[in-house]
Image 1 (cartoon, protein in one colour):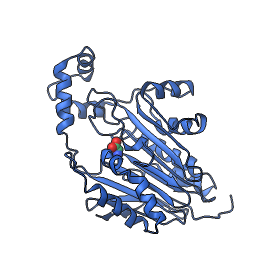
Image 2 (cartoon, rainbow, N blue to C red):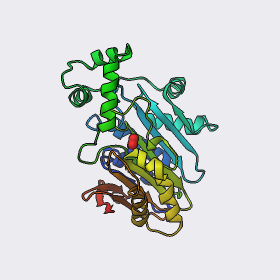
Image 3 (cartoon, protein in one colour):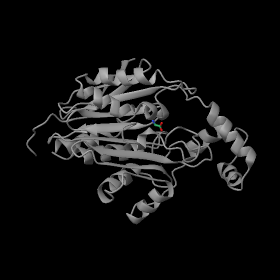
Amino acid sequence: MTKRTSPVVIIGSERSEVGLPAAMAILRDGGTAVDAVEAALRRCEDNLADHYVGTGGLPNARGDVELDASLMIGSSRAFGAVGAVKGFPNPISIARAVLEKLPQHCLLVGAGAELFAEENGFVRADLLTEDSKALFRSALHPSTDSVEGERTAAQVGDERYRQAAMDLVNTFAPHDGPWGTINILALDSTGELVVGVSTSGYPWKYPGRVGDSALPGAGNYCDVRFGAAACTGRGEMSMRVVGARGIVADLARGLDPDQACRAMLADAATLEDSFAAELRALALTPDGRHGGAAGQRGSVYAVMTPSSTEPELHPRSVL
Ligand code: GLY
């Protein structure tokens, strides 16, 4: 095992528990934070019971699952991301490939990201599960028997369908509970800090919508000198306040992780947002302190250290 020179810790947002034990096994063996973050998120993306990430993620307004993911390395501030990717179950691994194999770029979207994934050997899969189809039908098209039928109609330019989707996007309010994205933040034994984020984005989003999860500074930011941060929930709000970057800037000013996350949420709370949806944040410092904040009571995040036998849930502080 590698000699430990830094505290080792991994934290994740709601529903990350399925991924953290495998990631901690990597870290315990002296493995890297980037391997641990990718391993954790791949398990979350493959979790069919989770409708906000990877396979089984809820589709856009036309019934297509479009995924966003990003990875940021604290020592180099290298960033790799993909947005609005269809047909590949593990966008976090494509984001890592962008970071490692395409260093002249940070972010690929849509068809270009899919081309890059194919060229790099990623295998296509159908991401729309029966459960997700049923949720799509009941939310958008209660009288429709087949998602396929609706997609065909949309593809031939059914104006009524498009108008219905637009109306829905314009009036959509998220359901109760911790919906959305998964954040994983890890500190390895060498002191490297890494953040990964993966999501299927806003359910029933307008096709092509890319959220904060793919954007450096908004949903994901990491600087090994000061700390790491990531956001879940209403991505348009964290984009507008550059949320994750703001949290790391506050860590650099000496705020503790809870305070830094709350400060970002307080800034976001000054925005007019007709969707009135919640934003949540997590932060991890280079010395292993961690915290999180949310706009609602009851929100938690998961933590593992080398001595953990399973993820422990910690409360987020409430704005
Ligand atoms: N925070 C995830 C999203 O807005 O897509």
